[in-house]
Length: 460
Image (cartoon, rainbow, N blue to C red):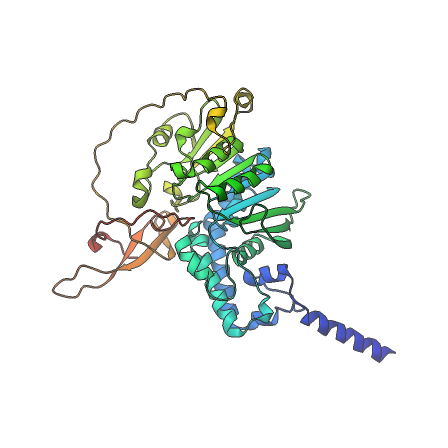
């Protein structure tokens, strides 16, 4: 009888080791988290290709936490945590699969909705892949996350090809990795299409010793938010969730455009709080009778590729009474704290009762018109500046030690103008985000001006 019991015990252990991996084990595996020996994925973590993935990803995540993520968490607790809307529905529509930054600011969101143009994709059980397929898939995942972990946003043109290679395709592997890196437990994953466009619904939970936390819901949808039927159906569904907080960052300056008026008006009419950088809703759209404005950081001119989207009203406001203080982290395309900005707009409850907020899905003329905006002060003309070197597309982000601490810069070999004698190739260094990078596919046309003079560049 004893021998039979021992046989059953060892048989049970063998079966448990061979059982299919859970979604949480898969997420922790992708994030480089060591798994218990009983996991069917534990043996795969001994392979050299996986250990390279684990080491590189964990190093990048440690850098992200030190340079930006932990500072964002502290800032969010101080400036956002008191607002009840941050514990309800949070909409982050132009960020793609950027769960990390939204979670840093809004960790208590009951429902978080992300939107982008990248496909949902899939996460096959890693134990079913060949070693070669595993190595290719993990490398593509690291490359897709690289700029996000260093700079704080995704580069769609860079991420799309990477997420079409290997076995871990689309944004789902990215979301799994981000949920695991931030200590969340995935409870269930479901592919959904509530309004026609493909999406995924992830139920997750986190351990917070400060509170009795409940399961939270993360949605991601692949949807075009420019005016049209797809945006109309998406916004109808999103509106059915009720009012909430909205977050906008590295949004390619799309919302000022007439072709994105539906989404812009929807966010203004249904948000009780909006947190954004200068690439979001124009400052003039925030009526002073409806919104309390707080400005953080510093306003600098947009990147050269976005130079036509400079906001003189926002620039003037930074010199006025709405300024609330600095920020200790980079935001959006301004990856370093010294030139980053954030606008925090909170709806004035007393004023909203007297104003009819038209639905973005119905004609604006049918609603009670808003009072005329308070005129903004005119901007004092400044002397023209010397032309700047034209930025060049850059693929990789690099941390660099400077006299003011660690900052993030970029490097890309630039071909010099042909001369009589061959000249060495120099790396182009920029303190800002790559001009060709956006969180969307709606990218501006390339600037026809020639590349920068290599003599003005700085070596890393």
